[in-house]
Image (tube, rainbow, N blue to C red; front, top):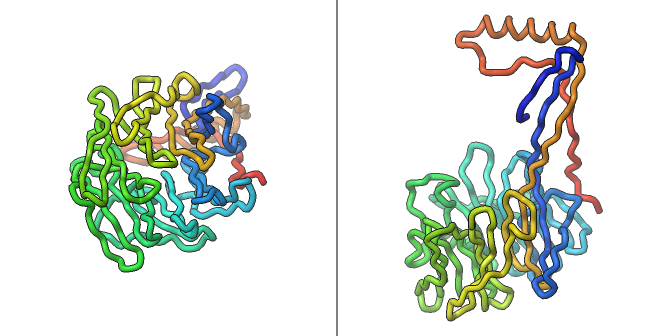
Length: 343
């Protein structure tokens, strides 16, 4: 609820309610065409399995999140997570049998979990790192590359680094020279990774063969965020928070020549959008926040209002200090949300 106002002449209470939801789109760079993706659902950060057989999406409505797995044709929906688990994003393993995710329970730090594509128990990484983020599967299907959340997510004074955890051996190692970098993204061939500097002003590539880091983009004016790869690994994409008109840049590799791929603010009317990844057909997946404000008119009998106010006065006078709550008549209207995707 944002605000409430009463009209005593008509026994009416006006309430402004806000619902947070998500929008996703597919952008065809060849045609310059933007089309809605699963418009009947509030979803973001879609992912696709190698070969494109499966997809997974994060569905959100206000404070509830669900990770769904489905066929890419929109059939065989399966709920993988509890709505109370706050989801950020997920990734398929190279063999398409498991999904790793960045998520957190309320009042708990961000963690990395993995689950079978057929559902079942969530598996947590057994590592001594309190906050974990941005997981990726390595080519061996057994190792998970992950980093730590940015400063505004948690633990602003804790040093950041990037790690590799082996699910089979329960062992962990730190990527050489990764101190001060986060948001890793493994390349399509598994030989390199993209990462952001902790101040979000640099994008770099790390080569697992040479053990070398190389900065390919530096921007001291704007925030650099959410990197991703082209399907052939020849381009690195990154979102640039540029005032109210965020843009997606791409950097040609290996020479590092940058160019603008898309201006999100010019194409989509939303308070925040971001490019997420390239789908198997080469289209760019885009997600956005959407705030829905609705005004409700509630009518009550004066006797009900007086009874509720009397109860409220008794509660306030019996508590020291008085409770910080608003006494309003009930019942309140409830907007129902159907969590199940339409098939």
